[in-house]
Length: 386
Image (cartoon, rainbow, N blue to C red):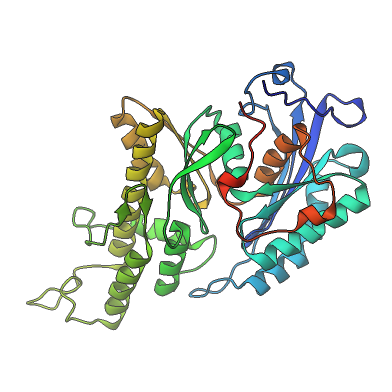
């Protein structure tokens, strides 16, 4: 049986406190959480119900001009500039005056992610650990999303759809691992949406994917989707060809290339398709692919729950399409969170890290804190679950 109380809280308290540092991409997050010491955690799989109390959840985003992505070196510079300020602000908001006495563990993102930003954040984590004499825990970014989603929604054993700028995976738990049932063969869905936003030169504030979602809502011709490639290969999917195709359509639209009969009427030369139509069609196409492989995974593991995590997971249309599929499957249920927890944040790293800490899984030497750009979800030994 699992015992989440394997390590007692510091100073004889009846609760644990963890600080989490996240900086794997353009969002820098610092979060502080509190777990009460619960008797039910002495034996049994209650890791989805820790009764977490969020003491602070601070985030700052590196935003580039319209039409531009974010480079690793510039993102790392942003994280270095803001990391100390965000940690101080998080401590202040959580009313923690003496971190040495009050904080049980410092959790940081070990990977996957962009190398330079990950390095910037882990240096801050190491420094705090040495200053405060508090142990470190390295966290898999994907597992952080899953554990935060499970805690917020109380989903017990769902099929997980993890959709973000760097990852697209369908996951289910089995025998101490989060097993990947299907994934993208090339680019992630968030990256696909972000790159199309760059082609359209729409703002990156608050995020490119969110702005595409808003344009898609303005589509007035929803009955006539622009036909796009639909590339599902078994349990996997491919999005690079779809992006290349819709990019070419957008460029023809901006150039007013009337030879393109998809965009312009053959006889009159009148424009038939708008930017809003392209955004709506892209969303519908990509999300239908995600729903298909998620439903197949649910059938395989005989699950009646879906948990959507990752930055793209707060897209309302994706949640609607997944909910419709769940209703069609004998009233299955879809779980999702809002932008506070879907988008990269420090709280999710603190949640997964604190679960690891409570199972006595901590860094023994600073050499174990080396970050990595490649760190697959199924590499993590999930000893806090049955």
